[in-house]
Length: 72
Image (tube, rainbow, N blue to C red; front, side):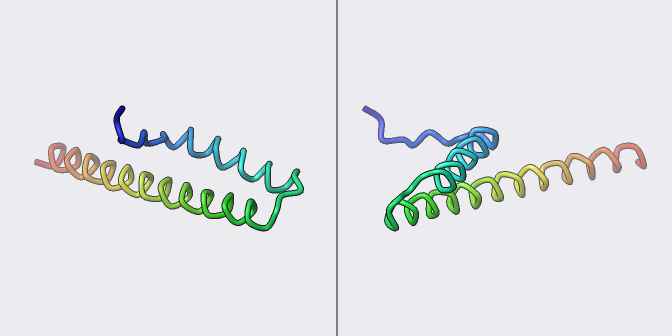
């Protein structure tokens, strides 16, 4: 069995965040369960932020390359 962790897509991460928020709002969770969900949510937000930053950089690089080929 592989020990690799499958990375979620941004869409899957948003869906999971939505589920976490709904559970936290609708359930009578223990303090520990609430804290665990909070930590999981924060980790998902950080992963999404990193992915979005990476995509933004790639778009800027592609855009810069296109501008140079148009100008040059």
